[in-house]
Length: 318
Image 1 (cartoon, rainbow, N blue to C red):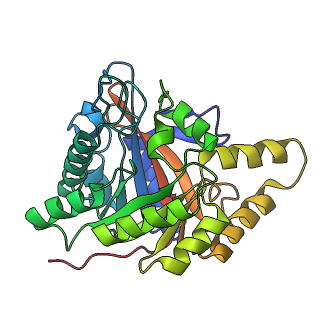
Image 2 (tube, helix red, strand yellow):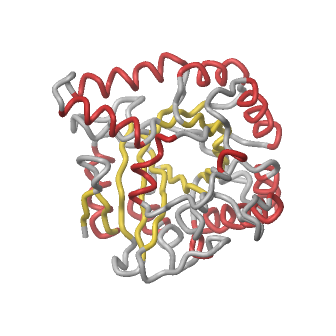
C-alpha cells in the first residue's frame, strides 16, 4: 500500500511490503540508517499514555525485526515519541488538568525505549524533552544488558516550533492544548538549549538532536558537545522549500542542497531530512531521506520513517 501525503509533495505512506523493496534500492545507493516513526489507523484507539506506541500490534515494534533481517548492516533507529499515539497529541503523559506528569512520562518513555531495544533497534531516540528520561532509559538498558548494544540519541534542543505541521498531519496527531510550550524550548531560547543539551549528555546520551536544525543552535551544540550532533530539517521546512520552488522562486534541488549544506557548515555530524528524495541521486555523506511506511497489516496501523544516509555510532557489544 502507498498513500501520498498532501502536506509533503512527493512523500508517501508505505506498507512494510512496499517499504522493504524501497529500502533495498536506497541501501544499494549508499543509505546507512533509518529512523522509524509510527502512526495509527482509525481502528486503534489513542489514549493518555499512548498505549499503542510500543504494542506488538502497533507499527514500530513489529517492523524492526524484518528490517534488521533484510538489511543487517542498516543502522535502525526507533523514534521514542508518544505524540502519534496519545489522544491529546502531546509527547508526554498528562495529569487530569492537562499539565505534564513528568514522572509518569519518564516511566512510559523508558519502557517504550527498552521495548524497541529488545526488538532489535540499534538506537532509541526519545523526543519528549522530560528531565531525567535519558538516565531512566540508560538504567533500563543496563539492567537488560543492552547498554553496550543500543545507543541513545536524544532530542536535546527541541523547540516548540510551528514547522511540524505536515508531520502532524501525516501521523494524525493534533495538539488539544498549548502544554507543549511548557516542555519544549521557546524559539527565542539559546542558553536554555545549552542547559538541555548538557543535561542529556550528563545523563548518558550518545548523540544529541537539534530540532529544527537552526544553524546557531547547531553551532552552539558542536561547541559544547562531546558526542555527535544531529540536526533535523523538519517537515514544514521541506514544505516551504517545495512550495517556493513550485512557484518558480528557485530550483528545488539546488535549494534543497543549499539548506542541508548550511546545516553541515554549522557543524552537524548528521542530518535527518526529507530533501534526500528530491533529486533521486545517490545519497551523499550528509543527505537524508524521509519515507512513510505502513505497518505490515495495512488495515491495522501505519508507521513512518526518516532515512539518514551517514554512518552513526554503533555501540560495541557488551
